[in-house]
Length: 102
Image 1 (cartoon, rainbow, N blue to C red):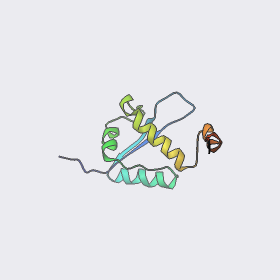
Image 2 (spheres, rainbow, N blue to C red; image 1 turned 135 degrees about the vertical axis):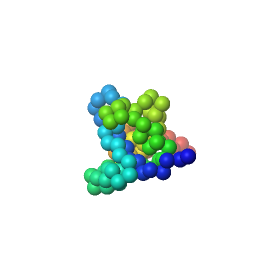
Image 3 (cartoon, rainbow, N blue to C red; image 1 turned 90 degrees about the vertical axis):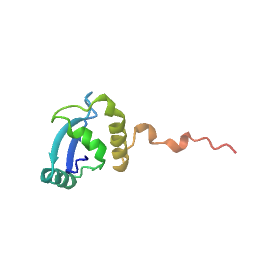
Image 4 (cartoon, helix red, strand yellow; image 1 turned 60 degrees about the vertical axis):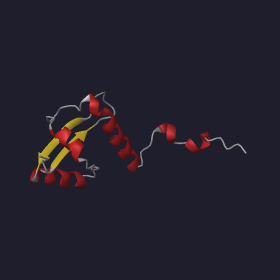
């Protein structure tokens, strides 16, 4: 039987440290609503994925994500950077790298 309780899990990732993303907030039901509301008010991007939230909800506060979630979390972090207009330095002049031979 599927658990339909609303969940909210907050992750923090610091690019200047060599740590994995860490669970910094976790709540269910009304507390999940409060976490989501606060995140939105603070400009934090929200991603809804019931399967990922089920996995992350099993983790403890302060726990780093497991290695088997690195790929999916890395994709979400990268996509959030693009949504915020942040691009790697190597992308700054991508058009001049295209060879337009006629």
